Image 1: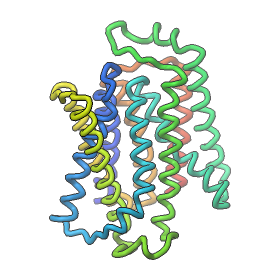
Image 2 (image 1 turned 135 degrees about the horizontal axis):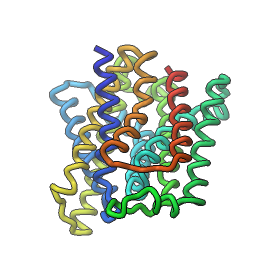
Image 3 (image 1 turned 45 degrees about the vertical axis):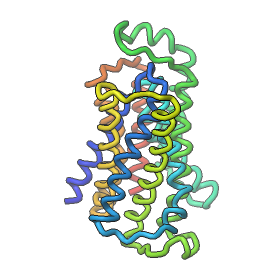
Length: 311
């Protein structure tokens, strides 16, 4: 059964990437806030369902304790959604999902963890790949867009600023993962874990994350619908809701996949960004240069290697 959950997670999260990209158009200045609204709504519904129908035992202390981690993840996703307005998914997704490299560096520097030669090689691959993508964008961005983009396709205001958003996602998401380790390892005082056991810590943390996202979604809705007086469009915003559903489904199936067979499920799920790149090429018809494909291949290889090492 764990294999089915693994496949579902891969398809859900890569599908979320694709739907998020389609729903994040450059001409929609508040598309990132609408994405927060959609994800907050779906995750909120799922969290409330778990607390009522699902009967999960939950304590307000858990919500407060996990809020710093939730904030890191949500802020990182905000920057990721902003970046999708300006850059191709096939570039953004590999950078965003390279946060494991930064987590490895943080553990090495601050926790004294050792790094195997393979892990070091993966971290170097990812770091150089991101650097090279930034250099290519800076030196050849305008020329590449002119050569590889159809005049009728969406125009991207790319460059170093566009690369910055997925890099910010990478950094902040890594900080969230680093803090997450403290919660899963029970490294904080017992007060933070009222009603939490080693068997349900993942579910409790996920509910805390979803409830926090629901609050953020409500705040975004008040601003977009109340302050800016924008109206939602089924034609333009249905993809945001689809992305939110895929994201929530992936969160749900991930826990069962990992608990069923960590050593195989973790690297498989960690490589879902490969499918995001494939979907971007098939459905979005994104065209990149040979240099960009080569560098993205470097980053993907590093991500996959880290995923296997993590398992």
